[in-house]
Image (cartoon, rainbow over all chains, first blue to last red; front, side):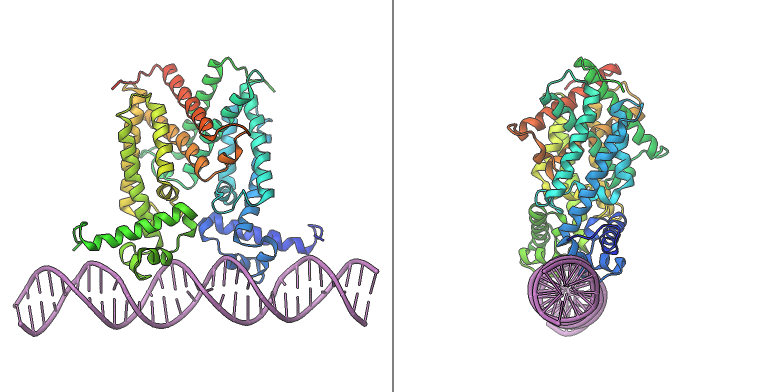
Length: 210
Length: 210
DNA sequence: CAGTACAACTTGACAGTGTCAAGTACAACG
DNA sequence: CGTTGTACTTGACACTGTCAAGTTGTACTG
């Protein structure tokens, strides 16, 4: 049976996971070597396999952890006084930047196989449910579920695109000379959330308050 | 000196590139092995290095090719009768889906180092210039360059997010049961372009016609 | 026409990689 | 004490990226 997480056994799993995250954060997911992970965690080169099965297993575990964290980030948005759309964009981008290791893996089911790892898929579903709850704050209750779904997908796309372009894409290199990256990012977030708010208003949707 | 591209010499380069693209399309960029590429191209395991220097070199070449293609896709949008925003979203998504191999690499400067490969950076700049021209069709001329830039970034983010989520992300697995993926995608594109059009109208921007 | 230079490769070697297979240490349980 | 199971370790294998050195053919000089 699995020992209590507080015991030393659980530590190796955590150690391995943290070592993997450190590598992914600094060099990207491609550079993740199981042997280097093991070396940094101070265990034999085969120990990680005991916990995660194979390379995709460790990535799936990171992905799962990431989705759980993202769901929490979405939940935390409910506490804000900011307009929900803007707060959502900021939360998404902040999560991505603060958890680059997780973020780089989460949306890559080509390398971690969300479809093959059930618990990762469940965590992803939870995060998406939380996103839909957040979107419901923008659209209000007077909306059919199909449109609500489309709204959720759309906002997700917008936030995701910005985050990926900022983190691994060429966006940081493409800001005009003399301008500040953070300012540009906030201008994009502002513009995006204004677009969302305008459309919601045009559709006669009323966001519900706190 | 470099031989004319029509000669047999150029063929190897093309062969290697195509083999690499085939691997990336089917298995992702992580699974790209230089030796497997060489094997499929029917050359020695070192031949690809002759042309591309190292693993990141081949990825940079693919990236460059991709950005050149994307720029062309943007140019082709000018021919459409559709509203520019919607046409742009569709063009971006189509490009991504029809050139998965290129797309999976282009925006990953963690693996192909756009910063280190000059010609790739130039191609990326060209594509971005073309994007700005396209955005100018939406915003019209009555807009200061800073706002125009923000508009371009924003639309880019929106389109990019949708494309990445569709191609490698969990979006295809997250459509509600009984609904069609293509319909969902088009609903998102419609909603996004409506948001853009609304904001442009609110700002008093007038798109210029054909 | 000999000589040289250079591009376009090939062959060989090396350290490092993912993963299968087998072993060891040790606690829990009967 | 013996069995069972977890938590690893050690060893091996085929494969990887890349450096170094060789080979072939072609172009161009003297």
